[in-house]
Image 1 (spheres, rainbow, N blue to C red):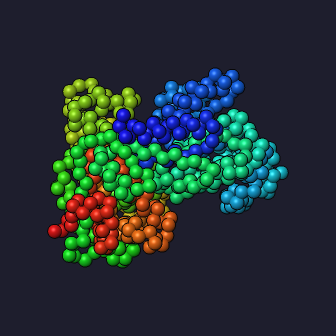
Image 2 (image 1 turned 60 degrees about the vertical axis):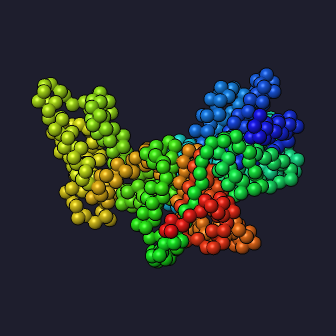
Image 3 (image 1 turned 45 degrees about the vertical axis):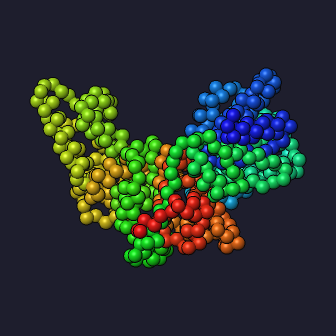
Length: 592
């Protein structure tokens, strides 16, 4: 067995011992350690030990995940075992508190958030079907329900109050402080395993730890995760409790030993053993040799001491030229940047992103024009270019296939589609106008979008104050090059090497290039490195840990090759700390 396998086996044996003793524990699994594998092995152990009894008694093992994707993965690995409930934290706690309707009504009435919601949205409504006042008597006949993404809704017609997802956590914390509820929870779920504990709500975890400390009746809880991979503000981060034993898993099955050595320098308290003997490199490029004028706090203090925008782009290109990587292979090669706004600059769709008040209108395709371009127009154009006409006509379904009675019809369609392809070299307005004025109804633009286009075409100078949200968004984007739409969709669909540093948590790639600059006031890599060199200089522990965690998460994505580019100017102390982390011979000034 390799050292990595021995370390993994030792950790799993300790977990099984804690399970047998019914003692709660923390499995601290660093990057690449196989945390999910360990969680699944624990579930299999629990199933083997308890399946017959739990089926007879109607008990279950609860496994709380952070995402639905993780939920599906775990369920598949345990073959959808009937005695295991795998769910996200909100869905799980709602399933166990929803029966307590009387208590929920009390919590709703006494919630400051619900009081504010009532005062802002409902109190002034003069309708006799609404509660006359915000009181228990006013909602005594109401059913408390929960719907994902709901925003605190009072429905007097159906006598329903719909909770917000934040309410589920807040109210579950109140329930967990009640002994009767904890007895019920332990009876139904003797074991609860919590995945990604570090990003689990801090107050919720603190209540669980407090009850463990008080030796209260409570399920045995296994916390699985890594405190150094906490990247969300409301998470607990590190669990420090003498009543919950921490079990380190000191394996790394992802990275080669060159990268693991660096990770162990960054995080010496959880030294890892690897088994990947592959050859790889670590290169660190800084830009201290740049002789021009760096950015100042003018027009955004979070850019202080970074390279000018174009110079930063040029610096990235210089580094890419030095590397023998295939940057077209997005599955194996990633360039990590701090924010989506920064990516939009490198990815050439910055003007398009600026059109939207909410970035998700573009990045999650919430805007209806973006959704049409993504799901209809671009698939049709791609299929036409590849001469896959069956796929092209299937995009919008049979009801939108144009009639092809003769060769003349086919010729008209071909000419129009050629015209449509040419329009994509112009701006967004030209593309939509080509579709609206088409001689053949293909592709079919939704009526709502056609009306928006025709309105903006008729009143191009109209003031924004007179426009609806959809009209305003379309007006703002209509003059922008359609190529920015193509660029943005390529990024969204993971067809480019770019990703945010936050967005790759849990991922792994052969080659990782991290651009470390300014652009967000929560992150300052020069301060982080200075603080790492001398912890006595840390002025803000939370800020230091936020920078440290993102740095660790980003570096630990690499399997084979890791390259860092600092566009931010670094102090002498920071450069010395980089030498400690990565070795003096691996550090280069890009401008020398």
